[in-house]
Length: 223
Ligand code: DC
Image (tube, rainbow, N blue to C red; front, side, top):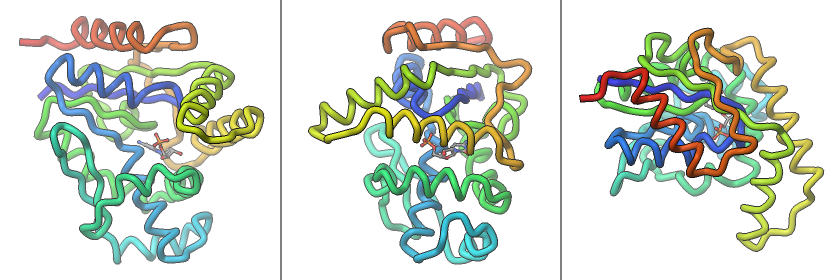
């Protein structure tokens, strides 16, 4: 199986670009952030403080996270309940960032990710795919963009959906999440030594996808 790891900070356009690249190549796209978000949603539903690692870890015995694909679109289930929309709520983002710092949560989601990768030609996007989940992936890409560019893109997305948003608050949240994700002790966000760095600050989505596809074709022997 060909496994492609795409890691990078939030808002670098990983999921959209990875999904499109996977479609071009006929690979499955797996959004691993959705799994952390589902654990975050569980903690919110259970009324647990997401910063309380011990309680979050204890909750894991009560939850089962699974993923399924409908017409090529990934859905994530929490104890059989489709939470694919709920995980996109703003409060789920911070909850996910908090629970992702808990080692027991990372261990809990590891087998599911490895199992999916073993069975499919796939692109996984996340923070620690190239460093921890799939250290032997044939292709590793670290996709990033400046915090300002990422905030700008998110701002446009939200405004287009009719939301009223404060650009500076958005930028601060991105900087805070970057800090959380790259400074936690457990599997911090960091470029794998053998990953190709791709900065999308000045690239359109189409150019980013083209660059990803080119890197995959160069690194993996596609039949
Ligand atoms: O990519 P995202 O914004 O949906 O990810 C949600 C959170 O989960 C983010 O704060 C980082 C964390 N995460 C992680 O720690 N490891 C991954 N492989 C994917 C996401």
